[in-house]
Length: 202
Figure 1: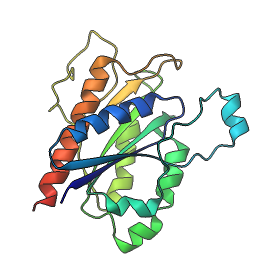
Figure 2: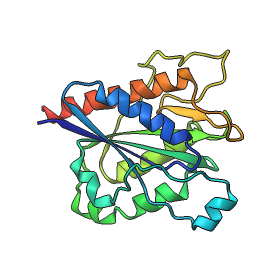
Figure 3: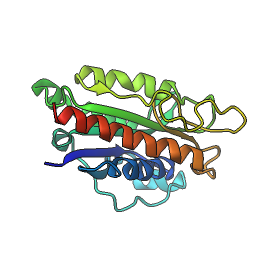
């Protein structure tokens, strides 16, 4: 039976979505792993999104909390808001109380990735503070650490990402994930899929 990995994200301007696509490629490269991209529901009215110049959403399906237990591994992605996950993703996780009560996510491996406006905008804190969500569900946090080797010690180039997970820097919105950031995202997907597959065979 195939190992199922869900990549669940929220993306307003496309930066997190781009990372999610690369993470899916990495996870799909592991033999015996099936992957699915999901978006969480939008909480802002359309008129507000238009004023924020947010592009239309993609056709990636919207997930409900009750679908999370179907996955053997989960990778959550979201942009930062003042160094923490955005309200849209927090609202989605706030709706998982029933899953918490029934212990439906206990033991599932999970990873995190993000997008920030600048290097000091929350690349680490956004993911570090999100670990509490995983802990309360009894999930197994799978960080990327320094295992990827893809520029983790790079100091000459501007880049996102950390030992907690993949990341990108959006700047004022026009900067999209670089090749190096996408390499880290691919590794993260492959790494977590490999862990999920190993745990599933125990």
